[in-house]
Image (cartoon, rainbow, N blue to C red; front, top):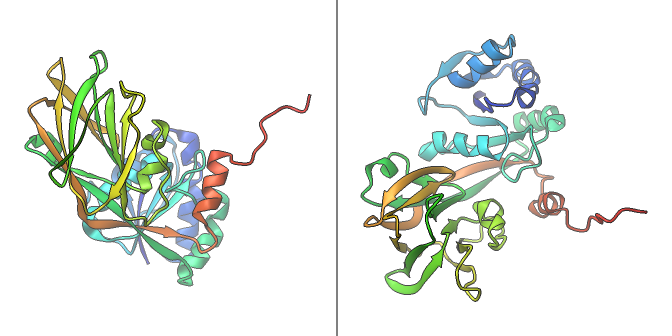
Length: 292
């Protein structure tokens, strides 16, 4: 099998499991392609001795499977490089428990035994696409998690006129608005009070950030509907963040958000259940009170 590997290049301690990953892949006789940036981090910064059959830059690669080793942020970067290639992604988590990267380093050996025995499942995750006339946002307008419209740091709140399939919904007076996929519902959207949406729900969540009106609430719509946003700001500009990559926009920029015409394939072990990850990550049922 041919694997393309992406990894976290910021925290050395998170990459210490990479040596084990490369050994496991070599043991299985895998063809190993490595993102050049990650390879240089491991060999130059961490002085690791690792084998790679080929190095690649950007999205110039093909593979049977992509491996992301890091956290959910590393997974999102890998997903943006995979784009519409249709290559399934395996997320190995070296940080805190993740929803996308949910294979622990201790499970790697067992997981690759299962992969080589074809005992795993592949989940299709929907992607959002941003359509606008801003050239910088057209470079990569796709989000696996969310597209957020936000006020600039020091500005007052913004006004976001929102329409669904051309029908007026609401004008949000808020610090921003988060449009999230089910995958992204447990990320930024959740932190601003959005609903948790089970994967494959064919839905999009629209959640305001610090709305001026207390009776404004998140809303969940069908994912084949189109969202149009017109933003007004006293500073005459605002931020658009696509899976965390943000650009400044002029207030005359109209934004249209719809489901992209491709999905991201995520590899899951058969024994990994979304609700188990949810309970563990959210600490549902845990009693935080001390015994004293």
